[in-house]
Amino acid sequence: MEQKENKRIMLTKQLLQNALLKLLKTVPLRAISIRELCKEAGINRTTFYNHYGSQYDLLRDISQRFLNSIAERLEKADFSDRESVHRRVAMVLEYMAENRELSILLMNNNTDAGFAEGIFSLPKIGDLLDAALINCRDERKRTATVSFVIHGSYKLLQDWINREERLLPSDQTEIILELAQRVCEQRDLA
Image (tube, rainbow, N blue to C red; front, side, top):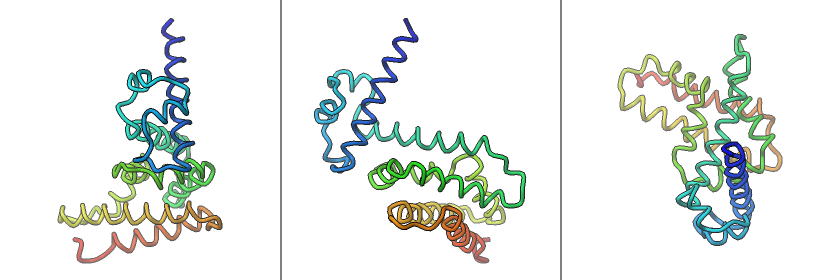
């Protein structure tokens, strides 16, 4: 019985996620009502509120699943070679390109400030920033630098994924890493 119930819950959540993503193609998140979302999903409002408190919670759930999918891909990869930093970041961009429509919807509609941090704190990605700033002893400067790199890189990703004619993921990765490295290597950060 529990397995059937779990399948029902999974199906309900999938219907809601699909409905939200469909609506986000034409309507900003703040303008999507729960009533409209439930109508699109073909479920009642009580069922919605059994799983989510708002459309923002639903978007957070979709965002977390997106980040988990990238993390799973990174965990399966072998990063023992010298090009591992570049390959890690390129894998994130490749995933985003393969899931471009979802990436665009999440990056353009995400009201969660933590989404950008979520991408750059994925296992095997967040460690790169920590390693680059290992000699930065001023915690305020370190925190500001991390924020600047994360949000600047996020904006570069957002601009990249929204372009019809994009650079290859490896070429965009090169730009992001070069700029991040320049910021992290500033002498006065120590």
